[in-house]
Length: 121
Image (cartoon, rainbow, N blue to C red; front, side, top):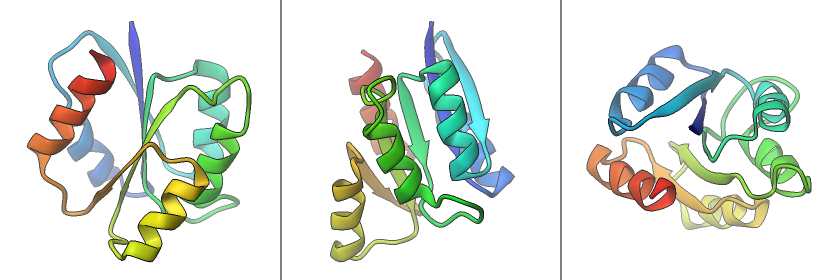
């Protein structure tokens, strides 16, 4: 079974992203901080992580992405950053941290669905 981890400090956003997921057999996990995301990634090894950048706590989304992508046990997790930061400089930082894709809020649910289908096959 595929695992998808949704990481955002706002519960409403986590619910919205979960509601856009295709009707596939998958386990949906959620985290409200970068630190929690890193722990879940290490323990559950999700196939896909959708991560916000701006989050309170020990790690923001960029730091969490970097930690996940630099750990041999989790580096294969596909990470999509879902964020309100849309400047080219922000996108560059996201890709430098290890993100595989980048969506700016508000994002197109159809584009996100296409990307999820592409990733999970």
